[in-house]
Image (tube, rainbow, N blue to C red; front, side, top):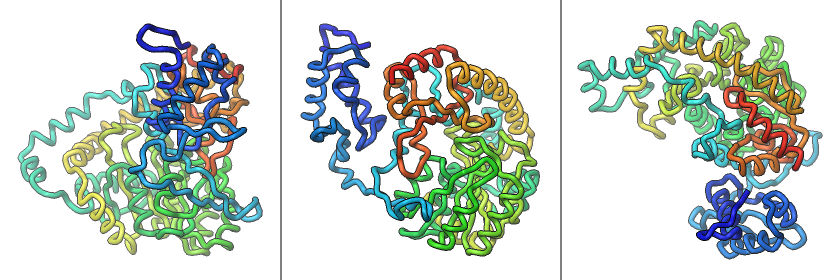
Length: 476
């Protein structure tokens, strides 16, 4: 609740709160502010105070008033220096409605900024990573000391690293992939600045603006936004429990001839689904029949069984490209990722990496190789999985008690939860209490109202959050 102080009036406090959210993208361009009546009720203020606060936002150029519709965040609220906002085009499934639908862009940057700025000191339900205390270890500092204590440090720190990445790490990764039944030689592996960079290298190599790309839906908000920024035409493929909707994929192939399919086959984000062998076989068949590549994003491999079905194991890296990284399980800021690719496109991918980053940090790559070779990473991952299993059980119990239901069987780091109310509105209300949610609309190519939200099992174990959640949900 806002409280009047000698230093700042209620009008100033309310307008400052909205202004901060707009500038940090927690309220995206095009987002609608609560009506005057709703806002007054939420903050226990008079309507005249809310009107005065909205007038201040209008004067600052942060919002615009639309006749008979309300107040909306201006598309250019963050400054004209960014240039005009591009409205991306998405293609729905053939027969599912109009072939071309324009919308305001999904603001994945909102999710990123919110995750990595200090909303409050409370555990954040919408976070995409483990809490920092979960990742604390003694072996990582030891690995860095081990590498920096050698004469080799002087040699590799005063020159560019190997174009494809540290040879020792690529050998370690090759051995690790063989444990997943993926046969990739070190000469098929390229290290990157995190898994997101690997995905970007693939897109920039294989695609051109205007190309069609199939992406699972619901899916990773950042992937939708990244492909938008590159000018791609997104074809959302519904993700089912057993895998992608094969009928939709087949129709896309016939109508649009897509160049790429991006899939999180194991512990899918946000549903937690894992691909079945039968679905995987059919996806590979479609790729061969219609001449497109598959990017398999295995970011959550450290949390899953080695025996889980992976497209790259089935295909043998013929039309598939494997992408993964260590930010989730090891250290978000180390930014070490990699891709494993077919030999016929390997050099093209390497050229794109060199054009974008020149090289990757050999110090961290050598330290990571030591962690893998000494078994430290494996033991660390086992501890995380055990801790996550306990956290998931507690979080699920609390969510069900709060009146939610799970739209998918809980697995991995994330839960796909149906709240029964509009989670965009719910997210804005929970921000007032210091909690960042990940509303369901963010995980769709075309942002539409959703009652779903993604929760992080590691950060939703506190009963206090769920008590606040129940209270706010009843008021939405």
